[in-house]
Image 1 (cartoon, rainbow, N blue to C red):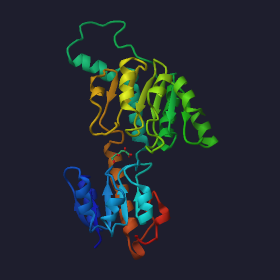
Image 2 (cartoon, protein in one colour):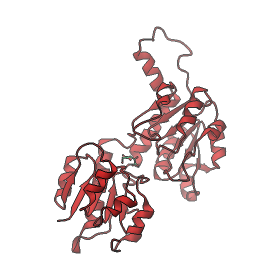
Image 3 (tube, helix red, strand yellow):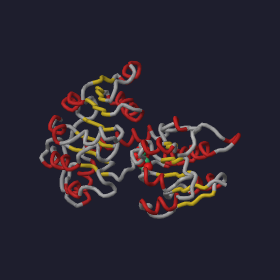
Image 4 (cartoon, protein in one colour):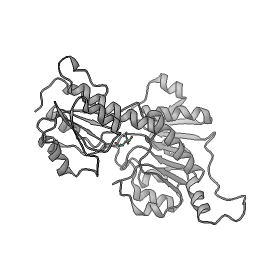
Length: 329
Ligand code: 8YV
């Protein structure tokens, strides 16, 4: 039987499914460090990760490894150049999380705009004595301008929701999306600078790469309206968190909603002292149904990629399908 490592705690019934196909080494405990991950991969044919870094040295320590299935749509934890050199297949979990993640982006954006977390803390602290006309005044979402940076599948799901809020949608992306999608979403392609100047609510839904590092820093925050909000449901590192703290403190923008952070699960401690930011612990895809679908899709990828003879199938969501059929190097 082929051997796999499941590097993280996941749903036990998905482990049971995997056990029907593989000899499973399950790390149902703390996150594995790089050395321990390499040690546990030394005799494995496949692995299921969730954000664990896998690069050249990890692959070199695992000469049998042929596939690593990430339980995430983002795969910036994989060094894909190293995967390609070694002919190791990487897979991810696209699509199954689009709607849950878009819902959550919406929730964070609205919470930031309407100061839900800030006012909730104030209430819990016992400060509420009377109604006041100017308590926690926020910005409207209905009828405002939504700026989406990263118009992929999740960005499109987010933009689709804007119709119900009568919003104008502008977007920026590496390349324009098909005209038909622009028309369906009633979305206008603009430069990043124009988007930052015009949007009332900016939402980041782009993948993290060298090029998207600090897509939003001090200069970009300075372009935004003082009444605008910024929401990041993409990846830590896309926003310069220190610059964001400064902008929030100085009220250069009204508020932010963050689900991801530079260096998470540690985060810039200054963020905790800023009232006008909503903070959540990387849970945008975290609904029962979606996390189950992600775990099962990662399992499907492993089962198909490692299947032999008549059981060999094309995995449903390969990142680098060009290595399929090539021998491990
Ligand atoms: C994952 C995510 O749960 O899919 C992604 O890219 O950010 C989340 O949905 C997280 O990355 C753990 O793998």
